[in-house]
Amino acid sequence: MILLPENALRGSYPPAVTPFINNEVDYQSYAVLIEYLIQGGSHGIVVNGTTGEPTTLTLQERSNLVKLAVNTSAGRVPVVAATGSQNYQETLQLMNAAMQAGADAMLIVTPYFLKPPERGLIEYYVSLAGETDLPVMIYHIPGRAGVSLPPAAIEKIASRAPNLVGVKHASTDLAFVTETLARLGPDFRIFVGLEELSFPMMALGAAGLMNAAANIVPAKIAELAVASRNKDMEHAQRLHNELFELNQAIFWDTNPIPMKYMLRRLGILSNNEHRLPMMKATPELEHRIDALLTRLELASVIKAR
Image 1 (cartoon, rainbow, N blue to C red):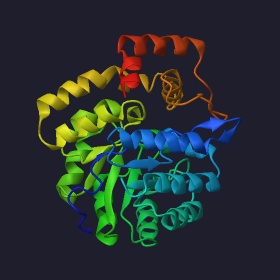
Image 2 (image 1 turned 90 degrees about the vertical axis):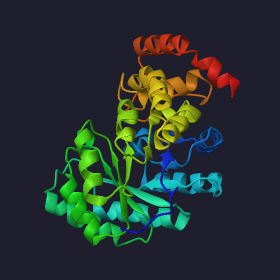
Image 3 (image 1 turned 180 degrees about the vertical axis):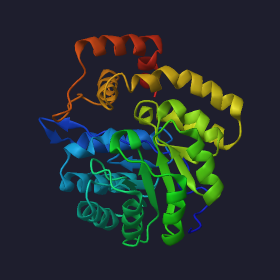
C-alpha cells in the first residue's frame, strides 16, 4: 500500500448534496454549498456520493460537479470523486474525467444490481486501480449495492493494487473495521458511512467520517472527527450524543430526502428539489423534521454562522 501523508484522507469529508432547479443541476448553489462546507471546517469534500443522488445524474453532470468542486476548493481541501457506476466502462469514464479535473482521490462503489461473484469484484477493483495513480477507496455499501466484500477480499485487492488506500464502510458490521485494520494495518483509511455509527467506528480506528449531516453542521462533524482522532473520547461521545437525533433523521425517508428538506428550511439551499424517482418530503415528514429542527435549535446555530 502506498504511504500517504499522515493527515491525508483523514477527518470529515461531507458527501455534498446535489441541488436542482427546474430539473437541472443548480451548479451555482452547489458551489455555494461547497464553500459552506469548507468554511465550516470540513477536511475534504466527497462529490457524487450517495447523498448527491448520482444515479439520477448523467455522466457529464457528474463530471461537471467534480470539476466545479475542485475549482471552488482551489486546493484548500482535498476533493474525493465518487466515480463508481454499475459498469466498468462508465466508471472508467468518470475516473478519467475526475483525473482531468484535478480530483485528489477516487471512491468507487461496489457495482450494484448485478451481484457479481467475489472473484469478479477483486478483478474489477484491481483493474480500475491500475488505471490511475491517485489513491483509490472502495465504497462498501451492501444495503444498496446488494453485494458485500469481506476483509479478506479487500486484502487480496490491496496486495495487487498498491494505490488502494481505504474503504468507506456503510454497514452496521463493526467487526469489519477491526478485521480490515488488522489485515491491512492502521494506516489503511476506513471512513464511516453510517451516521449513527460515527463515534463507534472512529473509536475502533476509522480515519474519518463521510457523514451526510455535515451538509448541515459541518463544524460539529469535523469536531467529532478531530476529537476521536485525538483520543478525546469523552468529548467525542458527547458530540455523538448531541448529533444522534439529527443522524437518525437522515433516514426518516430515503437519503437525501430529509436532508434536502432540512437544508431548505435552514436556508442553506433555496429549494429541496429532486429528480424522479426521488421525491420531496411528504407533509408528514416535513412536520416531523420541523419539530426536530426546533427542538435542536438548529436554525439559530446556522444563523449564528
